[in-house]
Image (cartoon, rainbow, N blue to C red):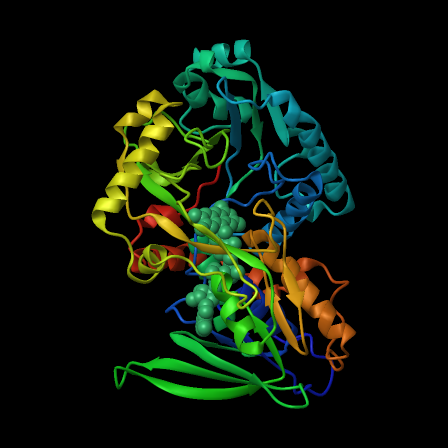
Length: 497
Ligand SMILES: Cc1cc2nc3c(=O)[nH]c(=O)nc-3n(C[C@H](O)[C@H](O)[C@H](O)COP(=O)(O)OP(=O)(O)OC[C@H]3O[C@@H](n4cnc5c(N)ncnc54)[C@H](O)[C@@H]3O)c2cc1C
């Protein structure tokens, strides 16, 4: 292996891969291929990588979604463990509390068999390879708390730094009106994931990998395959700062990866490769709660999605910043915010009110209204939260969901036509799986001749540059990206205890 992490074993193979879209899916594939030594050209319309919809939860076990299958949860567990091994500086390590309000039809006991399954599976993965222990000791993967446990914790002093699972529950026990919940409450090792530190990791690692050339501010406007179907021609417009205008360029590649996120269908249409998918527009709200007491875990209050009682989610960051989701149409979800592809087009069409937000951002009045609703929604469960204020602009965007099941959470990549793949991740932690399946596909198609077979290697060895980045550099770059994108730098900082 050379200093740049290339696994090329003999004469370079002139395979060139074009990746369109530098979100977490496209960037992870670029990292995977460039670490392998394959020539990659990445095209991203925005000015930096991973600048699309928010990524705030790792979903290591899918515990935030009680409606998905056990199999999806196990897939997300494995994918999340892999993600933390390859992107070690991107997790916000604090547990999540799951609380079911009295008014909700669900029962906490119904969640316990799945938690036991996840714990057993995690334990097995750690026994297989100790590097998989990224979610703490398997025996502490989750813990249940009954009313008398919480009443006891509510009488304890709030620690300035939580040292064990019970410490994390103290602010929750003190602030919730316990008579309004079903028991037990559950504490589980579901962590946060920082979109800014993912962006920083992708940018810094790709800079060090000579096999990848990254074109930012480069919008692909056409793709065309040659007659023998072994080349693609990519036409893109790139901003040129020296003339303050866009210049049209074109380049040829041997394999094309469509990683355009919610706009994946636009390229499918250009390639005439139809696909059924949905696109959903959603937003999370940035608040600041200066009067908070102690260090908070994530807390989710279950509720029926899309109704006024939809789930409320409190996601902690440093300096009293909290991100809120409220799964109602007035807060995180939007009326007509979920759209589907048609027989004529693989690209679902969002209404103009969403396109305006995606292109131009939010009006201040909209920010105030929806953030205030999110605060009131949270204050139903944490009454003291009423004193929180708007902490910044919303984290928002549109995401794709392949197929026609809007509850699908674990998906990765699909292949169509010749030398064409499209990433279809719903959660960021599925990006590595998409990259691995692509490498396997290259292998199946005989495109990896001349490269070492690295599929049997440890994950860290497949990503020596990415996994070897320095934590301080990643945080500094992430803070810079947060500021450039007009978010409080606290959202980029480490939450780790
Ligand atoms: C409110 C909200 C909260 C979320 N929370 C989480 C969470 O907690 N955890 C989680 O894992 N996931 C979360 N998601 C989902 C997650 O954001 C997406 O699944 C993920 O970002 C998809 O990554 P991607 O790389 O496929 O797409 P994107 O991030 O959308 O990247 C696609 C990229 O392609 C570029 N592009 C598109 N067309 C072109 C073109 N023609 N030329 C050049 N570039 C182009 C775009 O500029 C964009 O950067 C959330 C989504 C939303 C909306």
